[in-house]
Image (cartoon, rainbow, N blue to C red; front, side):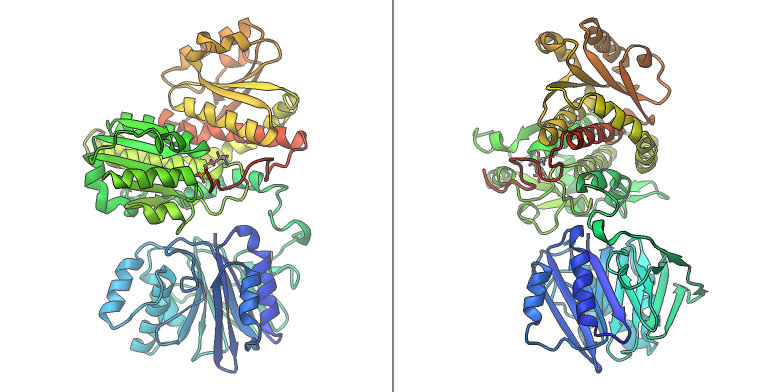
Length: 612
Ligand code: AGP
């Protein structure tokens, strides 16, 4: 996700901003920029690339001034390039803005501003916001902070932003809704950033802005109000952050951080897309092609690895809730086997990176044959989204660990929203069922939070099996793809050979593998297959296999027969993949750590397979 830094005080801002952006690099980004206010002149430097490229850009140019803002961009609207990099300047140069978040109604605001004579250089929602603030400022002759406040009442979406007004150059204006901002309280100086890491070396006195708050920072004063201009007393806290391991927060590895982020990343995935009050799903990225999807003769999902497993969950969802035939294909096979593709087909490419060569090639081939091409990707502006007709970004934030975790659950969440939206549109599911499932989807983040309390227990189980040489994962129905995903997680970071199977397949061969040395992870939560999966567990136990079962909270039946159980909160079986995968992610993480493996960069693997 994007990173923001700002400074106002008596020191030269440039080195503080650059170092602050370097501290935020761990968040993942594709471009960087700064704006410096020097004697009422604002100098803006920004480029695609890394902070070091930004420093190159400033070489030999004016970098004076004691007020400034900086930004690392993780693209959501508009591809990564120099023009789309932040800071963004309003058309008449009065406002300079850095922003983290998504303005959902930016297209509407942009059209309104165009009708008022505004033009835009970039594709971003942030430039629209800068121009909106300026238009209010110049047309109503209010203060800069009032113009910001009024503009934000017109915005739908999430933001963390810091604003410079060139005609009121003695202040920084910050606002927060959904994307965090923290203010560091210095002596005669203030720091502001997306998190405390760029600030802790200057002060440990912090004020965390709350949603709906606006902060006006001058050299010697901090004034916080809400959007109604009602004053709020700053709540100053003392933070204790070890500067040495800030890149991953308090986590030893990105993978563990990203596993723990899933309640937040899933909330980001459905933010602005599920209206909890109206109980409606709105997927803006596919609105224009929704009729074609609803009338599809067939959906073909193409993907690789973990994204392929998410696609398999999508197959169960679409066929049950939208009654549209679905095929899920490994992109690498699909692209070469001369498949039959009809104009009425809808191809969905699922890819975290948006750069996987096989998936990109598969959609190019399908596009040539007239199919509608959709994308479900996590990196805005990456190659696959740029080649699809429409799509939905997963908004999981940068996933840095090579083993995909939060991207998988975000992909499944998007597929779930799509299946219910299309199923409702096709009148396959009733309004009551639709609203019930939406309510259940909103409970997923808290369910994951709850099961995280079992982490120590899960770590103990991981310790018992860290020296295994093989493992089997079993699941049925929606949980069969989760069995495949669990096996992939274990094998790719701990290098233990692991296979996932539909549980009923065991008697067609794999059960020959079962002995007292074989750990068998069974996804056995309460669903329509429960009695059958209990039988599968008994079959494994009868051959002395070790059974580790993921069960619904309060399940006493399987507790009596399995060697270990991990309880997860009950939820509708269609949503259980989002929950049941998390213990398997945690097990694979701790097994790999205990085996001394490089968890974030496993051997032979890359985060994005951009070659065949
Ligand atoms: C998953 O943990 C692996 N990193 C890998 O299987 C990955 O899912 C696959 O390479 C597809 O990547 P993509 O989602 O970026 O297309």
